Amino acid sequence: MVVEILKGEKTINLFLEFLHRNNHSDMVILKNTKTAVEQRNSVTHSATVFANAIMNAGTTRDKFLRDNLDWFSKATNWAKFSATAGLGVIHKGHLKEGMNLLSPYLPKEEGNGSPFSEGGALFGLGIIHSNHGEVVKDYLLEALKNSGTKEVLQHGSCLGLGIAAMATQDKYIYETMKNYLDFDNAVVGEAVGYGMGLVMLGSQDEEAIEDMLNYCHETQHEKIIRGLAIGIALINYGLEEQADHLIDLMTSDKDYILRYGGMFTIALAYCGTGNNRAIRRLLHFAVSDVSDDVRRAAVMCLGFVLSRSPENCPRMVQLLSESYNPHVRYGACMAIGIACVGTANKEALDILIPMADDVVDFVRQGALLALSMVLIQATSKQDPQVDKVRKIYIDKINNKHENTMAKFGAILSQGIIDAGGRNVTIALHSRAGHKNMVGIAGLAMFVQYWFWHPLIHFLPLAFSPTAIIGLNKDLNMPVFQFQSNKPPSTFAYPEKLKLPEKKEAKKVETAVLSTTKKAKKLAEKKAKEKGINMDIDDKN
Image (tube, rainbow, N blue to C red; front, side, top):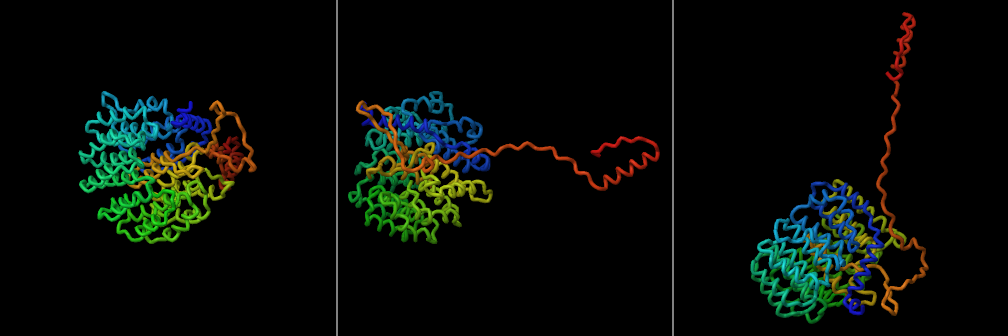
């Protein structure tokens, strides 16, 4: 029992039971979204798939998927990859049954399945076993070795291995993935970069950093360089001043993608420290770099550095949120979302709500996502703005003239604000102030969705169930109660939406015109005169 607790398996099982038993996700929201979005628009279709996965993360409830199999089957290629990986998000933490749940989609010996579905299943398997992948590491390694020339399987295997073997510093897995860089394939190389960084998370392995930097300068593929740059940032997680030399190297590189990686290296090395030098560096690049990607990342990364003092972030980025550059404005939104996550901070909301109507579509997307992060687990009793924001999401989704990018943000935000059956929050730090390494890495990977949508599935790594679990002297869960000085309505789950009632059509009486009445009387008079009894129907 003690070993189970120390490994975290006992906690995972208890959280899984809690999320399953107390799931309050609202399927009507998803049904309304599915009805509102255009059937042929693959972006909004994918957004709804992502929202379903996040809304039901860790609850094991896949009812919406089973009820809409025909609709889900419309996903093709990489959308199918993401949809299958979403099963891993829904069943995250179901360690005992993870392999069985995904077995229909995992690669078969016959090799006649869809590579996108199989690759997504390998990624999903890693998500289920995130940071507890002893059971599946060997299977994922074999899947990678047996993938032949199927780049999608290799992509899914590397992402799955990265999550399952996170921070293990397993040299064999690292070297196996590194060998796939030799093929110089953009799709595979990007996933290899992320996977290597996740496996070596926080290790400051100089040999790994040197290998990855050298390859960045050798390849011409932007996707590979980006994957390796973020991988290097992950390796330098929590190192603070020890990472300064590498930060200098990356931020002065002529390749803007390496400078982009340098921003995230600052963010992860100094996450939660509020370090003044790190903040000054990020602000410098936010206003001076020639690349919009670097400027956007620099502002966004302020959120990570200030994540332990969220009240400072809105003031820090307020002027940047009014910048002429939309990339800087987007970065300001996400910085507030990351730093003020779950706080319902009034200053943050005052900046974000007007930005939901920005003139640029991706800024609106960032504002909507940030609002969902700030208001996650907040109720309308605690802050009346919650209902207003939920209405903004519905209006954006139903507005036929709204841009697809903003709709994508609104749909995904509906999933985030109700994440985990309305029973989780996004936690970068524990209540005692300790950094949540898995959560920080997961959120850093999530914001890369800008370039690659499947990375949205990394967000649940940052989820923390809002439950209190106690143990008695026998290490069993006792029955205990809490006294709250607030009325239950303060912390009540939001009311579920109701499907519109179908009204029965009432039979309307036929209107009789005055000319018809005159004609009828005239006909009766003539009939009387002729002595003929005419039976005239009143309804003519």
